[in-house]
Length: 288
Ligand code: PRP
Ligand code: ZN
Image (cartoon, protein in one colour):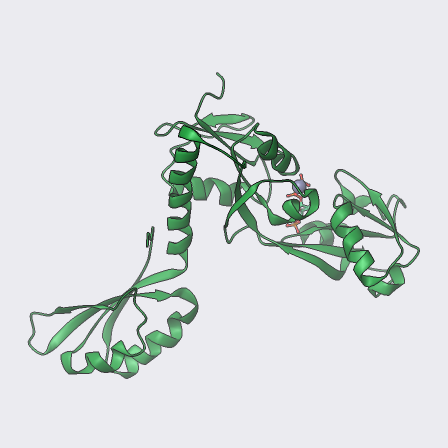
């Protein structure tokens, strides 16, 4: 079997981004079957192949057209400086690029890194940070397993990605400073055209729909009809809330979309205006 879809989407084959990436693709309606150790999967209902690659290789592959789209950490875009279209921030895969030292190290602040060696897979981002801070340290480039560099006495500090922090803890390292924040982003090769461009745009519309939906909750509640004007003032809704009469005269049901971040505040106000039977559901897709 070979990849033969119109569009190839590259995702991380193992690690921080895999679960979120597959979850997004599935919510975008792509029916993909994944098998352990397979390097790609066909999509059953669209001409799309999903390639499973090392995350660090994905930016170049998308730039060079080996893949048409990809899901990667924004940290890699910063580091590699590849020329790709950044389509959408995906709100998962949050992590930070951090400077860390062994717990018992005498280094306790960034300026003390002057003249020291720092191991990293992110030399460009680290060097820019050191230059901004006016620190002259030696950057030791490692492709992987950066966290063991202090134990091997290759470096006094490391600069590596921290997500849950478990890699650092396991290796007895503590964070000194954060160099960069990162999250997963959807990218595409520049200048896609024809059928590929059309399919990429369909996929992007779907991804936006999934992303937009995650920010909202759908809320329904019952309230006395004469209290509707009062609640309407603090209900953002999309355009305005939907108000439906109930069988019981003088009462209505109000339906509206609420932003997750303001949700509790608004629900409390609904309740204080006499709203009852408040039902909240997640929104699966939301296309504006
Ligand atoms: C990064 C980093 C650490 C790990 C940190 O690896 O190099 O190994 O994630 O995560 P934690 O704080 O949850 O332990 P990445 O996912 O980029 O995989 P790679 O090293 O194979 O490229
Ligand atoms: Zn990586």
